[in-house]
Each structure stands twice: as C-alpha cells, then as structure tokens.
Amino acid sequence: MYELLILGMLMSRDMSGYKLRGVLGSALVPQRKISNGVMYPLLSKLETNGDIVFIENPKDPRNKKLAHITDTGRTLFYQLMQQPVPEGARNESIYRFKFRGMFAVDRTQQQQLLQEYADKVQEDLNIYRKVHAHLSAKLTDEGVNQDALKAGIHSIELSIVICQAKQTWVTQYLSEIQNKESK
Image 1: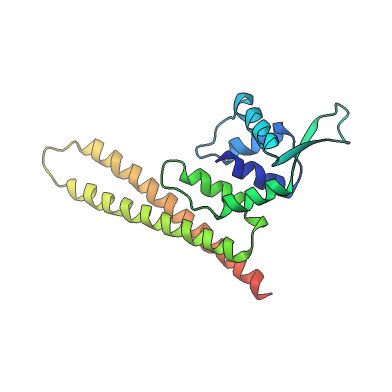
Image 2: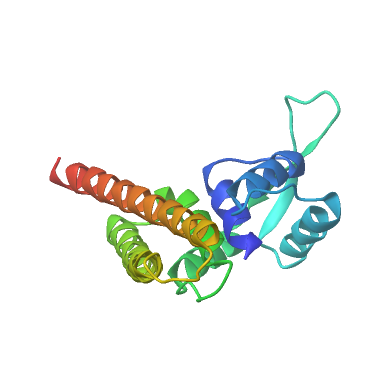
C-alpha cells in the first residue's frame, strides 16, 4: 500500500527518505508518524526490486541521497493506480494515496477514480442517514438513555457532514478536470 504513495511522490521529483516519510505519514488516515523502521526497509525493498535508485543530491553538503523512480518503478506505479481499492479499514488511505498521484495519470483515469470514490462516499452517507433516522426515532422510546442516544446521533451527524464535504470536494475536482478538457 505504501509503495503507491512513495512511487507517486517520486513521479513528481526526487526526494529523500526523510521527506518521503513525512509525506507518507501525512497522507495516512488517520495521520500518524512513520518510523524509520518502516520507511527504510520499504525503500530498500523498492530499490532491490529496481523500482527506485538512490542518487546523490548535489545541493546537499552532507551528500544525502535522494530516491529516484526508475522505468520499472513507473510501470509499477501505473499498475497500482489501476488496481481497484479494496474494501476495508484502509481504503480511505489508499484513495488518498491515489489522489496524490493523479497528476501522473490521464484524465479518464482521474475521472474514474473520483467517481468510484464518490460512489463509495455515497454508500457510506446512505448508511449514516439510515442510522441517524433509526437513532432519532428511538428518542421517543421510554427507558432509553437519552444522553447516550443524543451523543450517538451527534457522532453520526459528524460522519454525515464529513461525507457531504467529501462529495463537495469530488464535485469540484471533477469540474476542474472537465474544465481542463474543454480548454
């Protein structure tokens, strides 16, 4: 999973392991710090597979090396971008990884990915709305813990607002892509 983001970032420019570690941590949902014990074995694996090479950074007086994507790595990146996003707890992170690499794929693939994400968000939104309606109906039941029920409703309302924000983002991004096509 992390290979996709790393290769996608290297499609734009060469980067140090330190920089890639920061980008990776910030792209995860929820955001978290990536340890050297995770990052450097992953970079080593990509290097062993021929997906990246390390080059010297002429601007760095400490001779810090930069990861550089190879043709093999580019091929792997495009393959990973075309793979469907699996269901599960990490699918939001995988979508975010793909969004970071969208600049490197054609507009048709960008639109397909965004539409797939929009469909997933709509599924989630439909579920949250059903749960919200169910919990709201329970408010009239006798003997229920009103405070706990209201806290649950507020939590679901947050999930609904997040889904709506995602939908707005997708709509704006798709519009931007379509505007580029028409120019």
